Image 1: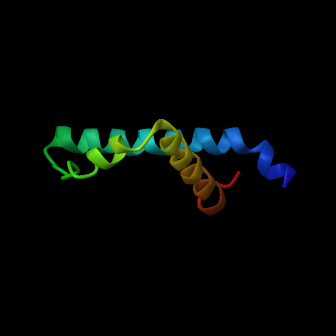
Image 2 (image 1 turned 30 degrees about the vertical axis):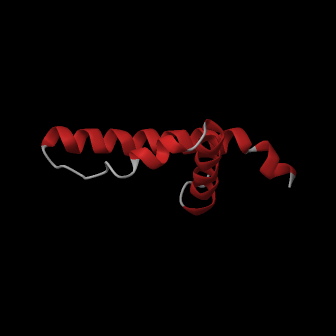
Image 3 (image 1 turned 180 degrees about the vertical axis):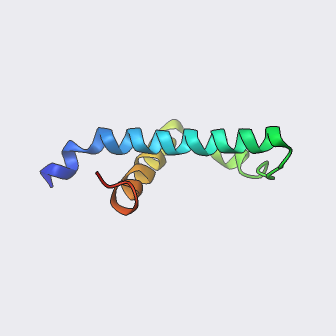
Length: 71
């Protein structure tokens, strides 16, 4: 449990990196002319508070740590 608590900042950083990476990939694909329809997702993201967004980033970081991004 102590090991998990010590890695909380690492989980958050990995979650942010993954979301920024996905955003960069979508931007490059849009620049190349490959359009991915995501307009239906933006209102849902903006309808939740910043606390929920931070929690989702943290959860994505935890999943990344324990599935494919092991040290």
